[in-house]
Each structure stands twice: as structure tokens, then as C-alpha cells.
Length: 505
Ligand SMILES: *[C@@H]1O[C@H](CO)[C@@H](O)[C@H](O)[C@H]1NC(C)=O
Ligand SMILES: *[C@@H]1O[C@H](CO)[C@@H](O)[C@H](O)[C@H]1NC(C)=O
Ligand SMILES: *[C@@H]1O[C@H](CO)[C@@H](O)[C@H](O)[C@H]1NC(C)=O
Ligand SMILES: *[C@@H]1O[C@H](CO)[C@@H](O)[C@H](O)[C@H]1NC(C)=O
Image 1 (cartoon, rainbow, N blue to C red):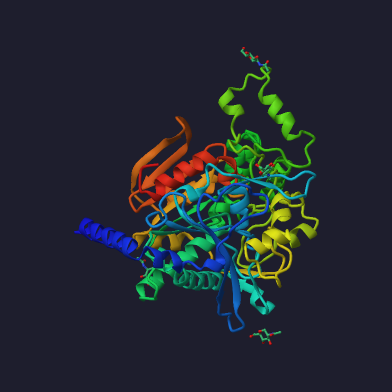
Image 2 (image 1 turned 180 degrees about the horizontal axis):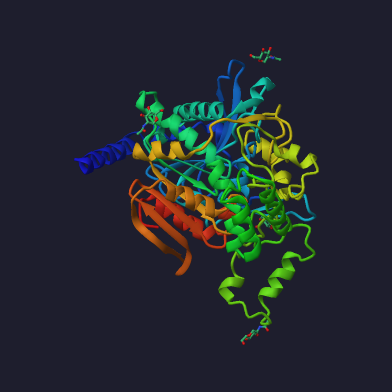
């Protein structure tokens, strides 16, 4: 019966496309089409659209939410449609577009800070999906409101706004409303994604039009639960040989498993010790150099090619990316439990944290994105409104309240409603370590239907996975940092496309 319905739906869709192809195509607003991009010389592999969707403010005036939409390079009418959200809170989704899985690889301009050259990214997620990059909430990236009272917001308002954005977006692009729809994001989007998914699911139940064909969601190195995330760093640091057995045992004894909310002074002392041990590392990928280290990228590469070390090659190559261009040495991301934990209440914005002489968040390398997205010709080409100020990777404009608490009840509710979930972790990220994500997914108590096993990409072990009977999958990506596709683009496109297609990863 179900299969029959699917067949009917597919064939009627085909008819529609054949019969009304022109009309369908024209539903996408031609004014939003991007026809050229500074730094890019080639032909576009698919259509790109960008612009604003205006939603009602709360109370008023309106909020203008900016999106960049990349049409699938394979089969736009059948491929899924994915909304991508970066975290922060307050960071622009151009992070994903420029540095992670967008259609282009950006080659740094010379001298530093000049305009980059754009090359096609062979591992773009647009190879297998239609993908919307959204700057959210208003006040982030190119999204804005004329009344800055709208910049006081939080988890619940953001989810409501993004749901309204989606409804309006599908009205503008009705030809995509029947495509399978997924929500994806990383880091603080571990909060954005489930809270939005709950709104979308509720909208569908309530018959809100247009009816979104929502199927599931995926989150990477995702902030989820204060306790699980807060407890994840100590075992991670121990397992990665960043702290000694002695320090680890001291921590276990003093803190009694409670690192997220240190119960006593002895625990504080040992946590501070651990903090010191790891403070020189690049917390977003412990294998990558940090800015303040004397070693340069070139030194590291050179060391990989010498035979002086007895470390096996596979270990030396952890963290190596197939990207032709270097990954960033540092980015923004919430770190547990020491630097910038997510707790109920106002979350300081990154620029604010940096001002507070915050150790560890000072070195930020977003030169390429900043140069490109602040160029007048680029901004004109992608339809950024003239009244919008400078683009920053992470906004200083928001007063953002963390209010939704643990995401675990959300995941339980969404999986119980039949929505699929992929919880993935770059296993060398120290910001939201895999140890926390593995522990909370296991804590749900779901029956294991695909026992812990390696998964393969390019005939190599790319990480490990465990599947649960509710359609929830936990997956690690070996040697990847906080922003997984930035480090492991090929492997990422592999797990992404297999998961979207419902195949075994
Ligand atoms: C663009 O193409 C021209 C002609 O093929 C070439 O000379 C030029 O270097 C290219 N520019 C970039 C930015 O790739
Ligand atoms: C901004 O919106 C608030 C709430 O609606 C209103 O009280 C205030 O007057 C508005 N300010 C401006 C400058 O429009
Ligand atoms: C490493 O050893 C291999 C085989 O022993 C040799 O071919 C290669 O030239 C050596 N590389 C360096 C950088 O010494
Ligand atoms: C999920 O949450 C909604 C809203 O709170 C509730 O109405 C619904 O019954 C829940 N569904 C499940 C399966 O728990």
C-alpha cells in the first residue's frame, strides 16, 4: 500500500514536471538568480538563488532573513532539500558555505585579505541535494531587522522564526515543497535543529500550509545536553592521551563523574589542571596546529614526509584533509566545560568573549569569507540589501537567551514520531567531543539494530557507527574536527548521501 502510494506520487510528479515544466521552473524567482560571482570564472554547475524572506517581527517590525539556495547538481526535482544552519549562537551559515560543504572551494587571495579565487568543490553537498544556507536569527550574517529590539531573542523565538521562514520560502519555491525535507547543522545548531524540527512537526500535525515533506534531521558535534556535553571532555582528553592516567584518576576520584558542575574544591583544582594541559591545543581539531604555536602548516606537512618517526602512517594522516586548500587553524564554537558553556540564560556573543581577554578565543581565521562577503560586487551579485552593514562570521548584535534546556526530550519525541536522526561527530573535536554525543545517544536506551562497526569511504575506515531501531544513527568521522566536512570532505559527502538515500552508511 505504501509502495503504491509512493509510485503514484512519483508518477504524478513526473507528469506535472512534463506538463508544466516551464511554469514550475519559473516559480523560482528570477530576480533571486545569481548569474555571476566575483572570483569564479567557470559555469555554474546548477542554479544558485539568494535573497531575503521577510517574516513578521515579534511584535513588529519585520525581520529580513537571508538565504543562499544551491539547487542540486543531480536531480533537483527528486533530490532531497536540506536546510543548513551553523551555530554560535550568532554565527553565519556562510561558514558552512565557504569552509565546509558549499559548491566552491575558496583559494585565499594574495596578499592576505584580498579577494579569493573560487574553484568548484568536488565534494559539495549540492552534488546530491538541494541545500539552503540560512543566516539565522535576524542580526546574524546578512539577516537583519530595522528595529534592533528584534535582536533580543532566544531558542524558542528562533525556532518559530525559522519555521515561518520555511513556510514562506516554500511559497516562493513551490516546486520543492514535495521533495523530502531535512534539517541539518552543527555545534549550537544542536539546539536550533531539534527545536525547529519540533515546530515543523507541529505545523504538519496542525495542517499549516504549505505542508512540508519533513523526513528527519542531522546534527554534527552538536550541543545537546549540559550534563552529557559537560562530562565529555575529561574522558576525551584521557582517551586521546592529552592527560595522564594519574590526572584522570584524580579527576574521577575528586569529581565522582560530575565534571559539568564541579561538586567541590578538589574537583575544581584537578579540572583547572586539565584545563592547563589542553589549553595550548587547537580545541576544534586537536591534530591541527593552533595559531600561537611556532610550527607552521608547512612544518607539519614536512614532518609527515620524514621517516624519522615510528608512528604508523595511518596515525600520521589523522586530520589530513583532501581539500586542496588548507583548513582554518581556528574557528568559533562553544567549549565545555571550561570556556563558554551553554547554560540557561544569556549566552555571551563571540566578539564579547574575545573582548573579555578570553584565553583561547582570540585567534580566529575567517579572512577568506570576510574578504569575499564584504566585497561590493559579491554582495550585489548575491542580492544583499544595501542597508546591511559589514558581514561578520559571528555577530555581536544579539542578546541571545538559551532557554530550551536539554535536547534529549526533543530527540525522544521526534524519533517517536518517526523522524530519522543522524548524530555525527568529528572524533578529534575537543569543543563538543564525541564522548558526550556517544553517551547521550546510548542513554536513550533504544534497541541496537546495527551494532558498532567501522564504516568505509574510499576503501578506508572512515569512522564508526551504531544504528538504533528508532531510525537514530550515531556516527563518528575519524580524524575530523568540529566542522567535519572542512576536514573530511570526501567522507562527509559519502555519509551524507548514503544517509539521505536511506542506505546503510
Ligand atoms: C579566468 O579565466 C581566464 C581565461 O581562461 C584566466 O586567464 C584567468 O586567470 C581566470 N581567472 C581566475 C580568477 O581563475
Ligand atoms: C521597535 O519595536 C518596539 C517593539 O515593537 C517598539 O516599542 C519601538 O518603538 C520600535 N522602535 C523603533 C525605532 O521603531
Ligand atoms: C621514506 O622511506 C621510503 C622507503 O623506505 C623512501 O622511499 C622515502 O624516500 C623515504 N622518505 C624520506 C622523506 O626520507
Ligand atoms: C511530542 O511533543 C508534542 C508537543 O509537546 C506532543 O503533542 C506530542 O504528543 C509528542 N509526541 C510524542 C510521540 O511524544
